[in-house]
Amino acid sequence: MKLGLVAVALLLLLNACTAQELPFPSTVQEIDARVVLSAGGAISGSLRSPVKLKVLSFQNTAEQEITQVKQVLEINGKTIEAKTEEDDYGNRYAVFEVNEKGSFTYKIEAMVHKKVRPRGLKDFNLSQGITEFSEYTEATEYIESDDAGMRTLALNRFPQDSWLETVAEVIDWTHKYVTYDKAYFPEVYSAKQTYQNKRGTCDEFAVLSAAMLRAKGIPTRVIVGPVFSAQEWNFHGWLEAYNPKAGWVPIDSTYGEAGLVDATHIEMGHFPDFKNAADSITSAQGTAVQIWPKTVEVTLINYVPFSDIISIRAERKEIKANSWQDINTLIENKLDSFVIVPVEIVMPAGFLIEGNQQTLLLKPLEKVLLSWKTIIKREIGEGYYLSGSYSVFSAHPKVETSITVFPGEESKEGALVEVMDLYGYIDLNTLKIEIYLQNLGNEDTEVDISLKTREKEIAEQHPTLAALSKKRVSLSIENFEDTEYFVLVKSPNLIYSAKIIPQKGIVETKISQPKEEPKAEGPDERGKEPETNKRTPIEEAIVIIGVFAVVFVAVFLLKTLVIK
Image (cartoon, rainbow, N blue to C red; front, side):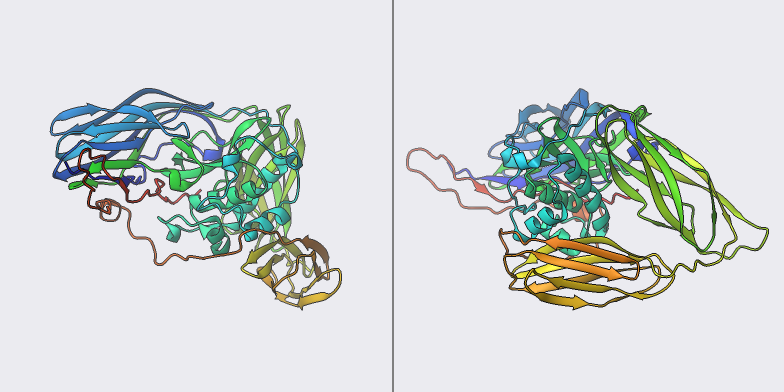
Protein backbone atom coordinates (compact mmCIF):
# COMPACT_ATOMS: atom_id res chain seq x y z
CA MET A 1 0.00 0.00 0.00
CA LYS A 2 1.24 3.50 -0.84
CA LEU A 3 0.13 6.32 1.42
CA GLY A 4 1.42 9.90 1.54
CA LEU A 5 -0.08 12.51 3.84
CA VAL A 6 -0.06 16.21 3.15
CA ALA A 7 -0.56 18.94 5.79
CA VAL A 8 -2.00 22.08 4.28
CA ALA A 9 -2.29 25.44 5.97
CA LEU A 10 -5.30 27.10 7.29
CA LEU A 11 -8.30 28.73 5.77
CA LEU A 12 -8.04 32.47 6.08
CA LEU A 13 -10.69 34.55 7.74
CA LEU A 14 -12.62 37.10 5.71
CA ASN A 15 -14.09 40.23 7.21
CA ALA A 16 -17.25 39.89 9.17
CA CYS A 17 -20.41 40.74 7.37
CA THR A 18 -22.52 42.33 10.08
CA ALA A 19 -21.83 45.65 11.78
CA GLN A 20 -23.89 46.09 14.91
CA GLU A 21 -24.98 49.18 16.76
CA LEU A 22 -22.15 49.42 19.25
CA PRO A 23 -20.63 52.57 20.72
CA PHE A 24 -16.94 53.40 20.46
CA PRO A 25 -15.22 50.05 21.27
CA SER A 26 -13.05 51.25 24.16
CA THR A 27 -16.21 52.11 26.11
CA VAL A 28 -17.63 48.54 26.00
CA GLN A 29 -17.19 46.40 29.14
CA GLU A 30 -19.57 43.51 28.45
CA ILE A 31 -21.27 41.87 25.48
CA ASP A 32 -23.50 38.91 24.70
CA ALA A 33 -23.28 37.82 21.09
CA ARG A 34 -23.91 34.99 18.67
CA VAL A 35 -20.75 34.34 16.62
CA VAL A 36 -20.70 32.13 13.53
CA LEU A 37 -17.53 31.08 11.71
CA SER A 38 -18.14 29.37 8.39
CA ALA A 39 -16.41 28.34 5.18
CA GLY A 40 -16.93 26.06 2.22
CA GLY A 41 -14.77 23.94 -0.03
CA ALA A 42 -14.56 20.86 -2.20
CA ILE A 43 -12.82 17.47 -2.08
CA SER A 44 -11.87 15.76 -5.33
CA GLY A 45 -9.38 13.27 -6.78
CA SER A 46 -8.70 9.89 -5.24
CA LEU A 47 -9.83 9.42 -1.63
CA ARG A 48 -7.65 6.76 -0.05
CA SER A 49 -8.20 7.90 3.52
CA PRO A 50 -10.42 10.44 5.31
CA VAL A 51 -9.69 14.13 4.94
CA LYS A 52 -9.05 15.68 8.35
CA LEU A 53 -9.98 19.34 8.73
CA LYS A 54 -8.79 20.95 11.97
CA VAL A 55 -10.23 24.42 12.64
CA LEU A 56 -9.47 26.79 15.53
CA SER A 57 -12.60 27.20 17.64
CA PHE A 58 -13.61 29.44 20.55
CA GLN A 59 -11.97 29.40 23.97
CA ASN A 60 -13.20 29.84 27.52
CA THR A 61 -11.07 32.35 29.41
CA ALA A 62 -11.26 34.20 32.72
CA GLU A 63 -13.33 36.90 30.98
CA GLN A 64 -15.02 34.91 28.22
CA GLU A 65 -17.64 32.17 28.48
CA ILE A 66 -18.61 30.05 25.45
CA THR A 67 -21.99 28.27 25.52
CA GLN A 68 -24.24 26.39 23.09
CA VAL A 69 -21.42 25.48 20.72
CA LYS A 70 -22.46 23.84 17.47
CA GLN A 71 -19.73 22.56 15.10
CA VAL A 72 -20.98 20.80 11.96
CA LEU A 73 -19.89 20.11 8.39
CA GLU A 74 -22.38 19.43 5.58
CA ILE A 75 -21.44 17.35 2.52
CA ASN A 76 -23.70 15.62 0.01
CA GLY A 77 -26.72 16.09 2.27
CA LYS A 78 -24.96 14.51 5.24
CA THR A 79 -24.01 16.17 8.53
CA ILE A 80 -20.71 15.52 10.28
CA GLU A 81 -20.29 16.70 13.86
CA ALA A 82 -16.84 17.78 14.94
CA LYS A 83 -14.69 16.21 17.57
CA THR A 84 -12.76 18.55 19.86
CA GLU A 85 -8.98 18.57 20.24
CA GLU A 86 -6.53 20.78 22.13
CA ASP A 87 -3.10 21.83 20.95
CA ASP A 88 0.07 22.22 23.00
CA TYR A 89 -0.98 25.73 24.04
CA GLY A 90 -4.39 24.68 25.38
CA ASN A 91 -6.40 26.02 22.40
CA ARG A 92 -9.53 24.17 21.28
CA TYR A 93 -10.03 22.97 17.71
CA ALA A 94 -13.05 21.55 15.90
CA VAL A 95 -11.91 18.46 13.96
CA PHE A 96 -13.96 17.16 11.02
CA GLU A 97 -13.17 13.80 9.39
CA VAL A 98 -14.66 13.58 5.88
CA ASN A 99 -14.91 10.21 4.11
CA GLU A 100 -16.34 11.26 0.75
CA LYS A 101 -15.77 13.62 -2.14
CA GLY A 102 -17.91 16.61 -3.02
CA SER A 103 -18.61 20.21 -2.05
CA PHE A 104 -18.93 20.96 1.65
CA THR A 105 -19.58 23.77 4.10
CA TYR A 106 -18.77 23.89 7.78
CA LYS A 107 -20.03 26.15 10.52
CA ILE A 108 -18.88 26.80 14.08
CA GLU A 109 -21.56 28.64 16.01
CA ALA A 110 -21.29 29.77 19.61
CA MET A 111 -22.93 32.02 22.13
CA VAL A 112 -20.30 34.29 23.66
CA HIS A 113 -20.50 36.19 26.92
CA LYS A 114 -17.55 38.51 27.44
CA LYS A 115 -17.13 40.72 30.49
CA VAL A 116 -13.99 42.71 31.15
CA ARG A 117 -13.08 42.90 34.82
CA PRO A 118 -10.43 45.04 36.52
CA ARG A 119 -7.44 42.79 37.11
CA GLY A 120 -6.35 44.27 40.41
CA LEU A 121 -3.09 45.18 38.70
CA LYS A 122 0.00 45.29 40.88
CA ASP A 123 3.46 46.36 39.87
CA PHE A 124 6.48 44.06 39.58
CA ASN A 125 10.16 44.98 39.54
CA LEU A 126 11.60 43.62 36.29
CA SER A 127 15.13 43.62 37.71
CA GLN A 128 14.04 40.58 39.76
CA GLY A 129 13.33 38.64 36.56
CA ILE A 130 10.18 36.70 35.64
CA THR A 131 10.83 32.96 35.76
CA GLU A 132 7.39 31.68 34.68
CA PHE A 133 6.45 31.05 31.03
CA SER A 134 10.00 31.50 29.75
CA GLU A 135 8.94 30.04 26.39
CA TYR A 136 7.02 33.27 25.79
CA THR A 137 10.17 35.39 26.19
CA GLU A 138 12.05 33.61 23.40
CA ALA A 139 12.55 35.12 19.96
CA THR A 140 10.37 33.78 17.13
CA GLU A 141 10.15 34.29 13.39
CA TYR A 142 8.06 37.45 13.65
CA ILE A 143 9.15 38.60 17.13
CA GLU A 144 12.96 39.00 17.04
CA SER A 145 13.38 40.00 20.67
CA ASP A 146 17.02 38.76 20.76
CA ASP A 147 18.07 41.00 17.88
CA ALA A 148 20.65 43.69 18.73
CA GLY A 149 18.49 46.39 17.16
CA MET A 150 15.36 45.34 19.03
CA ARG A 151 17.23 45.05 22.34
CA THR A 152 18.90 48.44 21.91
CA LEU A 153 15.55 50.01 21.10
CA ALA A 154 13.72 48.31 24.00
CA LEU A 155 16.29 48.73 26.76
CA ASN A 156 17.05 52.39 25.96
CA ARG A 157 13.59 53.62 25.02
CA PHE A 158 11.96 51.79 27.98
CA PRO A 159 14.67 51.72 30.68
CA GLN A 160 12.37 51.56 33.71
CA ASP A 161 12.13 48.44 35.91
CA SER A 162 8.41 48.88 36.57
CA TRP A 163 6.24 46.25 34.82
CA LEU A 164 3.27 48.61 34.71
CA GLU A 165 5.20 51.60 33.39
CA THR A 166 6.92 49.44 30.77
CA VAL A 167 3.69 47.94 29.46
CA ALA A 168 1.85 51.27 29.40
CA GLU A 169 4.70 53.04 27.61
CA VAL A 170 5.32 50.24 25.09
CA ILE A 171 1.64 50.20 24.12
CA ASP A 172 1.44 53.99 23.93
CA TRP A 173 4.67 54.25 21.92
CA THR A 174 3.74 51.51 19.42
CA HIS A 175 0.27 52.96 18.93
CA LYS A 176 1.80 56.31 17.97
CA TYR A 177 4.89 55.01 16.13
CA VAL A 178 3.17 52.65 13.67
CA THR A 179 0.82 54.11 11.06
CA TYR A 180 -2.08 51.84 10.13
CA ASP A 181 -1.70 51.00 6.44
CA LYS A 182 -3.72 48.35 4.59
CA ALA A 183 -0.96 48.10 1.95
CA TYR A 184 0.71 45.74 4.45
CA PHE A 185 -2.23 43.34 4.19
CA PRO A 186 -2.28 40.32 4.04
CA GLU A 187 1.38 39.43 4.73
CA VAL A 188 2.69 39.46 8.28
CA TYR A 189 5.81 41.59 8.73
CA SER A 190 8.19 41.01 11.62
CA ALA A 191 8.98 43.36 14.48
CA LYS A 192 12.24 44.48 12.82
CA GLN A 193 10.51 45.08 9.52
CA THR A 194 7.73 46.99 11.25
CA TYR A 195 10.25 49.20 13.04
CA GLN A 196 11.90 50.04 9.73
CA ASN A 197 8.67 50.48 7.77
CA LYS A 198 6.83 52.38 10.53
CA ARG A 199 3.61 51.04 9.02
CA GLY A 200 1.41 47.96 9.20
CA THR A 201 -1.88 46.53 10.37
CA CYS A 202 -2.85 44.87 13.64
CA ASP A 203 -0.26 42.09 13.39
CA GLU A 204 2.57 44.59 12.97
CA PHE A 205 1.42 46.61 15.98
CA ALA A 206 1.34 43.36 17.97
CA VAL A 207 4.72 41.91 16.98
CA LEU A 208 6.60 45.20 17.53
CA SER A 209 5.06 45.55 21.01
CA ALA A 210 5.80 41.89 21.76
CA ALA A 211 9.46 42.28 20.75
CA MET A 212 9.84 45.26 23.11
CA LEU A 213 8.19 43.42 26.01
CA ARG A 214 10.09 40.14 25.49
CA ALA A 215 13.38 42.05 25.24
CA LYS A 216 12.52 43.46 28.67
CA GLY A 217 11.95 39.93 30.01
CA ILE A 218 8.12 40.07 30.03
CA PRO A 219 6.46 36.86 28.75
CA THR A 220 4.17 37.87 25.88
CA ARG A 221 1.87 35.80 23.66
CA VAL A 222 -0.21 36.67 20.60
CA ILE A 223 -4.01 36.39 20.56
CA VAL A 224 -6.31 36.00 17.55
CA GLY A 225 -10.05 36.44 17.15
CA PRO A 226 -12.83 38.78 16.00
CA VAL A 227 -13.03 42.37 17.23
CA PHE A 228 -15.30 45.34 16.60
CA SER A 229 -13.40 48.17 14.89
CA ALA A 230 -16.00 50.92 15.42
CA GLN A 231 -17.23 50.24 11.87
CA GLU A 232 -17.54 46.46 11.54
CA TRP A 233 -16.42 43.15 13.00
CA ASN A 234 -13.00 42.10 11.67
CA PHE A 235 -10.50 39.41 12.45
CA HIS A 236 -7.72 40.82 14.60
CA GLY A 237 -4.47 40.16 16.44
CA TRP A 238 -3.48 41.45 19.87
CA LEU A 239 -1.39 40.34 22.89
CA GLU A 240 -1.30 39.16 26.48
CA ALA A 241 1.62 39.97 28.78
CA TYR A 242 2.33 38.01 31.96
CA ASN A 243 2.41 39.78 35.31
CA PRO A 244 3.57 37.55 38.22
CA LYS A 245 1.09 39.31 40.52
CA ALA A 246 -1.90 39.47 38.15
CA GLY A 247 -1.53 36.65 35.60
CA TRP A 248 -1.97 37.14 31.86
CA VAL A 249 -2.97 40.74 31.10
CA PRO A 250 -4.52 41.58 27.68
CA ILE A 251 -2.98 44.45 25.71
CA ASP A 252 -3.75 45.87 22.26
CA SER A 253 -1.38 48.46 20.83
CA THR A 254 -3.53 48.91 17.71
CA TYR A 255 -6.11 50.55 19.98
CA GLY A 256 -3.75 51.69 22.75
CA GLU A 257 -5.47 49.45 25.33
CA ALA A 258 -3.85 47.49 28.16
CA GLY A 259 -5.36 45.61 31.09
CA LEU A 260 -8.89 46.80 30.29
CA VAL A 261 -9.03 45.62 26.67
CA ASP A 262 -12.62 46.20 25.55
CA ALA A 263 -15.16 43.37 25.48
CA THR A 264 -15.46 43.28 21.68
CA HIS A 265 -12.19 41.28 21.66
CA ILE A 266 -13.42 37.67 21.27
CA GLU A 267 -10.52 35.28 21.82
CA MET A 268 -10.06 32.21 19.64
CA GLY A 269 -6.52 31.24 20.58
CA HIS A 270 -3.16 32.24 22.07
CA PHE A 271 0.26 31.37 20.61
CA PRO A 272 3.98 32.21 20.84
CA ASP A 273 3.84 33.70 17.32
CA PHE A 274 1.29 34.36 14.58
CA LYS A 275 3.05 31.62 12.62
CA ASN A 276 1.59 29.08 15.08
CA ALA A 277 -1.98 30.37 14.64
CA ALA A 278 -3.13 28.03 11.89
CA ASP A 279 -5.82 25.54 11.01
CA SER A 280 -4.72 22.50 9.05
CA ILE A 281 -5.95 19.99 6.50
CA THR A 282 -4.53 16.48 6.32
CA SER A 283 -5.25 14.39 3.25
CA ALA A 284 -3.84 11.43 1.37
CA GLN A 285 -1.64 11.96 -1.66
CA GLY A 286 -3.81 12.29 -4.73
CA THR A 287 -6.66 13.97 -2.85
CA ALA A 288 -7.33 17.59 -3.81
CA VAL A 289 -8.90 19.86 -1.20
CA GLN A 290 -10.08 23.35 -2.04
CA ILE A 291 -11.09 25.76 0.70
CA TRP A 292 -12.95 29.03 0.25
CA PRO A 293 -12.40 32.04 2.51
CA LYS A 294 -13.72 31.80 6.04
CA THR A 295 -16.21 34.41 7.24
CA VAL A 296 -17.22 35.53 10.71
CA GLU A 297 -20.68 36.90 11.45
CA VAL A 298 -21.45 38.49 14.80
CA THR A 299 -24.98 39.19 16.00
CA LEU A 300 -24.96 41.44 19.01
CA ILE A 301 -27.55 40.57 21.66
CA ASN A 302 -26.59 42.96 24.42
CA TYR A 303 -23.78 45.25 25.52
CA VAL A 304 -22.91 47.15 28.69
CA PRO A 305 -20.53 50.16 28.81
CA PHE A 306 -17.79 50.49 31.39
CA SER A 307 -18.84 51.98 34.69
CA ASP A 308 -17.24 52.55 38.10
CA ILE A 309 -13.72 52.17 36.67
CA ILE A 310 -12.78 55.78 36.05
CA SER A 311 -14.57 59.12 35.98
CA ILE A 312 -14.07 61.77 33.30
CA ARG A 313 -14.73 65.48 33.69
CA ALA A 314 -14.23 67.45 30.46
CA GLU A 315 -14.44 71.22 30.69
CA ARG A 316 -16.69 73.43 28.62
CA LYS A 317 -14.17 75.40 26.65
CA GLU A 318 -14.04 78.90 25.21
CA ILE A 319 -10.96 79.62 23.10
CA LYS A 320 -9.63 82.15 20.63
CA ALA A 321 -8.81 81.27 17.05
CA ASN A 322 -5.29 81.24 15.56
CA SER A 323 -3.31 80.39 18.70
CA TRP A 324 -2.61 77.19 20.63
CA GLN A 325 -4.95 76.60 23.56
CA ASP A 326 -5.04 73.93 26.29
CA ILE A 327 -8.08 71.70 26.74
CA ASN A 328 -8.08 70.04 30.16
CA THR A 329 -9.78 66.82 31.19
CA LEU A 330 -9.79 65.40 34.71
CA ILE A 331 -9.42 61.59 34.82
CA GLU A 332 -9.96 59.82 38.15
CA ASN A 333 -9.25 56.18 38.97
CA LYS A 334 -12.13 54.93 41.11
CA LEU A 335 -10.40 51.62 41.90
CA ASP A 336 -8.08 50.84 44.81
CA SER A 337 -5.66 49.21 42.35
CA PHE A 338 -3.64 50.34 39.34
CA VAL A 339 -5.44 50.67 36.03
CA ILE A 340 -4.28 51.34 32.46
CA VAL A 341 -6.77 53.07 30.17
CA PRO A 342 -6.70 54.65 26.70
CA VAL A 343 -7.93 58.24 26.62
CA GLU A 344 -8.79 59.76 23.24
CA ILE A 345 -10.10 63.20 22.35
CA VAL A 346 -11.98 63.85 19.10
CA MET A 347 -12.25 67.48 18.02
CA PRO A 348 -14.66 69.06 15.51
CA ALA A 349 -13.52 69.44 11.89
CA GLY A 350 -10.95 72.20 11.37
CA PHE A 351 -9.10 71.78 14.68
CA LEU A 352 -5.52 70.61 14.92
CA ILE A 353 -4.92 68.52 18.04
CA GLU A 354 -1.54 67.38 19.27
CA GLY A 355 -1.41 63.83 20.63
CA ASN A 356 -5.11 63.00 20.53
CA GLN A 357 -4.69 59.61 22.31
CA GLN A 358 -2.73 58.51 25.35
CA THR A 359 -2.39 55.20 27.15
CA LEU A 360 -2.62 56.34 30.75
CA LEU A 361 -1.34 54.49 33.85
CA LEU A 362 -3.27 55.51 36.97
CA LYS A 363 -2.32 54.71 40.54
CA PRO A 364 -5.04 53.56 42.97
CA LEU A 365 -7.63 56.34 43.37
CA GLU A 366 -5.37 58.76 41.50
CA LYS A 367 -6.63 61.91 39.77
CA VAL A 368 -4.78 63.17 36.69
CA LEU A 369 -5.37 66.36 34.73
CA LEU A 370 -4.72 65.71 31.05
CA SER A 371 -4.03 68.66 28.77
CA TRP A 372 -4.24 68.66 25.00
CA LYS A 373 -2.98 71.50 22.83
CA THR A 374 -5.36 72.51 20.05
CA ILE A 375 -5.59 75.27 17.48
CA ILE A 376 -8.03 76.34 14.78
CA LYS A 377 -6.73 78.62 12.05
CA ARG A 378 -9.77 80.64 11.11
CA GLU A 379 -10.67 84.26 10.51
CA ILE A 380 -13.83 85.07 12.47
CA GLY A 381 -15.53 88.43 12.11
CA GLU A 382 -15.94 90.74 15.07
CA GLY A 383 -19.11 89.88 16.96
CA TYR A 384 -19.25 86.32 15.56
CA TYR A 385 -18.19 82.98 17.04
CA LEU A 386 -18.11 79.25 16.19
CA SER A 387 -19.69 76.63 18.41
CA GLY A 388 -19.52 72.85 18.48
CA SER A 389 -18.60 69.96 20.73
CA TYR A 390 -15.68 67.65 21.35
CA SER A 391 -15.73 64.09 22.73
CA VAL A 392 -13.53 62.09 25.10
CA PHE A 393 -13.45 58.28 24.91
CA SER A 394 -12.04 55.86 27.47
CA ALA A 395 -13.16 52.98 29.70
CA HIS A 396 -16.23 55.04 30.43
CA PRO A 397 -19.39 56.07 28.55
CA LYS A 398 -18.67 58.71 25.91
CA VAL A 399 -18.24 62.25 27.30
CA GLU A 400 -19.26 65.13 25.04
CA THR A 401 -18.66 68.79 25.91
CA SER A 402 -19.18 72.12 24.15
CA ILE A 403 -16.42 74.27 22.68
CA THR A 404 -16.81 77.87 21.49
CA VAL A 405 -14.30 79.76 19.31
CA PHE A 406 -14.09 83.56 19.35
CA PRO A 407 -12.06 85.85 17.08
CA GLY A 408 -8.35 85.90 17.83
CA GLU A 409 -5.08 87.13 16.37
CA GLU A 410 -2.14 84.91 15.49
CA SER A 411 0.11 84.24 18.47
CA LYS A 412 3.44 86.06 18.71
CA GLU A 413 5.10 83.41 20.88
CA GLY A 414 7.70 82.44 18.25
CA ALA A 415 9.14 78.92 17.98
CA LEU A 416 8.09 76.21 20.44
CA VAL A 417 10.24 73.12 19.87
CA GLU A 418 9.57 69.77 21.55
CA VAL A 419 11.33 66.39 21.33
CA MET A 420 8.44 64.01 20.72
CA ASP A 421 10.63 60.89 20.76
CA LEU A 422 14.27 59.77 20.75
CA TYR A 423 15.56 56.22 20.49
CA GLY A 424 18.51 54.14 19.29
CA TYR A 425 18.60 51.10 17.01
CA ILE A 426 21.31 48.84 15.57
CA ASP A 427 21.28 47.88 11.88
CA LEU A 428 24.21 45.60 10.99
CA ASN A 429 27.29 47.50 12.24
CA THR A 430 25.59 50.88 12.41
CA LEU A 431 24.05 52.53 15.47
CA LYS A 432 21.18 54.74 14.34
CA ILE A 433 19.63 57.37 16.58
CA GLU A 434 16.23 58.71 15.58
CA ILE A 435 15.00 62.07 16.90
CA TYR A 436 11.41 63.16 16.30
CA LEU A 437 10.93 66.93 16.63
CA GLN A 438 7.96 69.25 16.38
CA ASN A 439 7.53 73.02 16.38
CA LEU A 440 4.22 74.23 17.77
CA GLY A 441 5.22 77.86 17.34
CA ASN A 442 4.54 80.26 14.47
CA GLU A 443 8.18 80.89 13.54
CA ASP A 444 10.81 78.74 11.84
CA THR A 445 13.84 77.94 13.97
CA GLU A 446 17.17 76.14 13.84
CA VAL A 447 17.74 73.18 16.17
CA ASP A 448 21.24 72.20 17.33
CA ILE A 449 21.80 68.45 17.74
CA SER A 450 25.11 66.98 18.95
CA LEU A 451 26.28 63.42 19.56
CA LYS A 452 29.30 62.44 21.63
CA THR A 453 30.82 59.87 23.97
CA ARG A 454 32.50 60.74 27.24
CA GLU A 455 35.78 61.04 25.35
CA LYS A 456 34.96 62.70 22.03
CA GLU A 457 32.55 64.53 19.78
CA ILE A 458 30.97 62.27 17.14
CA ALA A 459 28.59 64.31 15.00
CA GLU A 460 26.33 67.33 14.93
CA GLN A 461 23.40 68.58 12.83
CA HIS A 462 21.55 71.88 12.60
CA PRO A 463 18.18 71.22 10.94
CA THR A 464 15.64 73.98 10.39
CA LEU A 465 12.21 73.24 11.79
CA ALA A 466 9.38 75.11 10.13
CA ALA A 467 6.50 76.59 12.09
CA LEU A 468 3.70 74.11 12.93
CA SER A 469 5.72 71.20 11.54
CA LYS A 470 7.31 67.90 12.53
CA LYS A 471 10.62 66.42 11.42
CA ARG A 472 12.60 63.22 11.94
CA VAL A 473 16.36 63.61 12.23
CA SER A 474 18.72 60.60 12.05
CA LEU A 475 22.26 60.24 13.36
CA SER A 476 24.32 57.23 12.25
CA ILE A 477 27.53 55.80 13.70
CA GLU A 478 29.20 53.08 11.65
CA ASN A 479 31.33 50.54 13.50
CA PHE A 480 30.09 51.94 16.78
CA GLU A 481 31.90 51.30 20.05
CA ASP A 482 30.69 49.43 23.12
CA THR A 483 30.22 52.60 25.12
CA GLU A 484 27.66 55.19 26.16
CA TYR A 485 26.52 57.79 23.62
CA PHE A 486 25.03 61.15 24.62
CA VAL A 487 22.60 63.21 22.54
CA LEU A 488 21.94 66.91 23.19
CA VAL A 489 19.10 68.83 21.50
CA LYS A 490 18.99 72.63 21.85
CA SER A 491 16.72 75.36 20.54
CA PRO A 492 15.86 78.86 21.87
CA ASN A 493 13.21 77.34 24.13
CA LEU A 494 14.58 73.83 24.72
CA ILE A 495 17.50 71.87 26.19
CA TYR A 496 17.00 68.10 25.97
CA SER A 497 19.54 65.32 26.65
CA ALA A 498 19.45 61.53 26.34
CA LYS A 499 21.81 58.57 26.72
CA ILE A 500 21.98 55.55 24.37
CA ILE A 501 23.77 52.30 25.31
CA PRO A 502 24.14 49.79 22.42
CA GLN A 503 23.04 46.25 23.27
CA LYS A 504 24.44 42.95 22.07
CA GLY A 505 22.43 40.39 20.14
CA ILE A 506 21.83 39.11 16.63
CA VAL A 507 22.65 41.89 14.16
CA GLU A 508 21.56 40.48 10.79
CA THR A 509 18.65 42.35 9.28
CA LYS A 510 16.42 41.87 6.25
CA ILE A 511 13.77 44.44 5.52
CA SER A 512 10.74 43.77 3.32
CA GLN A 513 8.45 46.37 1.85
CA PRO A 514 4.95 45.71 0.53
CA LYS A 515 5.27 44.96 -3.17
CA GLU A 516 1.94 46.36 -4.28
CA GLU A 517 -1.33 47.78 -3.07
CA PRO A 518 -3.70 45.13 -1.64
CA LYS A 519 -6.20 43.65 -4.01
CA ALA A 520 -9.86 43.20 -3.28
CA GLU A 521 -10.53 40.69 -0.54
CA GLY A 522 -12.75 37.89 -1.74
CA PRO A 523 -12.81 34.37 -3.16
CA ASP A 524 -10.58 35.31 -6.12
CA GLU A 525 -7.74 36.23 -3.78
CA ARG A 526 -8.37 34.20 -0.66
CA GLY A 527 -10.25 31.15 -1.94
CA LYS A 528 -7.56 29.49 -4.01
CA GLU A 529 -6.77 25.85 -3.52
CA PRO A 530 -3.97 25.58 -0.94
CA GLU A 531 -0.63 24.76 -2.46
CA THR A 532 0.83 21.36 -1.68
CA ASN A 533 4.24 19.82 -2.02
CA LYS A 534 3.69 16.19 -2.97
CA ARG A 535 6.36 13.60 -2.38
CA THR A 536 6.54 9.97 -3.55
CA PRO A 537 5.87 7.64 -0.59
CA ILE A 538 8.56 5.12 0.42
CA GLU A 539 7.52 1.48 0.17
CA GLU A 540 8.66 -0.87 2.87
CA ALA A 541 8.90 -4.65 2.23
CA ILE A 542 6.82 -5.65 5.25
CA VAL A 543 5.07 -2.67 6.82
CA ILE A 544 4.44 0.75 5.29
CA ILE A 545 4.54 3.36 7.97
CA GLY A 546 4.29 6.27 5.49
CA VAL A 547 6.57 9.23 5.16
CA PHE A 548 4.86 12.46 6.02
CA ALA A 549 5.73 15.59 4.10
CA VAL A 550 4.88 18.78 5.88
CA VAL A 551 4.21 21.24 3.11
CA PHE A 552 3.80 24.44 5.02
CA VAL A 553 2.01 25.94 7.99
CA ALA A 554 0.54 29.32 7.16
CA VAL A 555 -0.59 32.14 9.35
CA PHE A 556 -4.24 31.94 10.37
CA LEU A 557 -4.62 35.65 10.82
CA LEU A 558 -6.40 37.60 8.10
CA LYS A 559 -5.07 41.15 7.99
CA THR A 560 -8.10 43.44 8.18
CA LEU A 561 -8.41 47.18 8.24
CA VAL A 562 -9.04 48.38 11.80
CA ILE A 563 -9.94 52.01 11.78
CA LYS A 564 -11.42 53.87 14.66
